[in-house]
Amino acid sequence: MNMSDQVAAARAAFYRLAASPAKTRDAILLAMADLLGSESSGILAANARDAAAAEESGLAAPLYRRLVLTEAKLRTMADSLRSVASLPDPIGTTELVRELDEGLELRRIRVPIGVIGVIFESRPDALVQIASLGIKSGNSVILKGGTEARETNRALHSLFVRAISSVTPSGDGAPLSDALQLVETREQIRTMLELDAGIDLMIPRGSNDLVRFIQQNTRIPVLGHADGVCHLYIHGDADAAMAVRLAKDAKTQYPAVCNAIETLLVHEGASHTLSAIARAMPEVELRGCERTRSQIDALPADEDDWDTEYNDLVLSVRIVDSIDEAIAHVNRHGSHHTDAIVTSSPDAADRFLREVDSSSVLWNASTRFADGFRYGLGAEVGISTGKIHARGPVGLEGLTTTQYRVVGEGHIVADYADGRRHFTHRDRQ
Image (cartoon, rainbow, N blue to C red):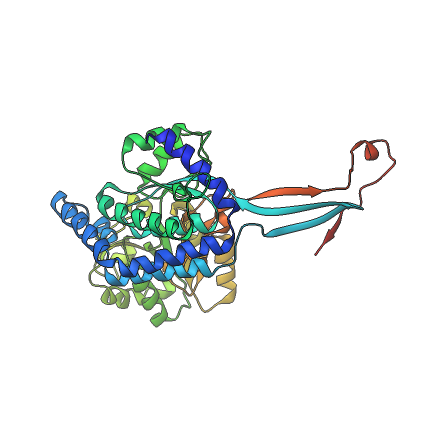
């Protein structure tokens, strides 16, 4: 099947999936969760083949860590599927009810977007998150994973097809399993980007170069983020033990992900915490400004470091004189993704939360919380740093749009145009 045919099949399946009852879509996700357990050995075997090939090719360490699956990760993936299944159905949610006039009612309803193309990095668990959100929200999804996870992605996609088929007999019309399409080549990506009449939204999850390539080479709307340059700012009155704990978690808990911090900003009044932070994470290479290097052992940081997403055990550190300087640094060098402040002052926290222009801003909490699963969204299809349609972790609501529905009793505009009738516009609960 060529790319155009795959998109057409996805479109036909979308119309069936969007009209399916919530219990059907939830049953698919629960069936997939069960398959992750019963078929774990096959998934891990496929992943082992990918991991061996990645080692042989010299895949970068951060990407390799994202690639490798374990029994624990499979259990987490299954939990995520069950979590998404337990969420309220986003389709048909009524946001507004307005009586335009007697017998003339307007409703604004959440509906699926349609066909969504998602290009994601080496994390095969991303396929499960994306597919689950697509099914739950009634959208068809065309999945393009990283080449390094090809065998794992094939195994997971095959299980999803089995889960869909077990719940929804083929019957008449398009096979519902066509709602999840898997593509594998760069040539297919290029073709996808030309199919703006068939694909409603593109979501790239990968390198900065990939995201910018997608943005610059398609007329399809693009949702996502290019960089994950995240900050933790330690204010002068911060609790020292808390600052150390949050800095360590935000940098080392999973350094290869987009919500790990890349820059630590420290108020001069809290510079005494730097030694304890350095001792708490000896595995991290520190790159500091001159003032930082007078406090701790660190390599010199240059201007490029403030704009770099390392995705590794590297952290740039800068001492600042004020919260104003910290906020200015974040807004200038950050990627508007996720930034946090450590402080005991509600006033300082309020300023940071209001003035930092990022999709997630946290007070006394690790940036690693900026995640769809941890936000209670069940999972996420990606994180958006844009300000149109969806921002931050994109869950079910971000995969829906709105439709206005008007119900009347033979109402015509002419009755209002000549002044015989007047709109009332009464909102109803």
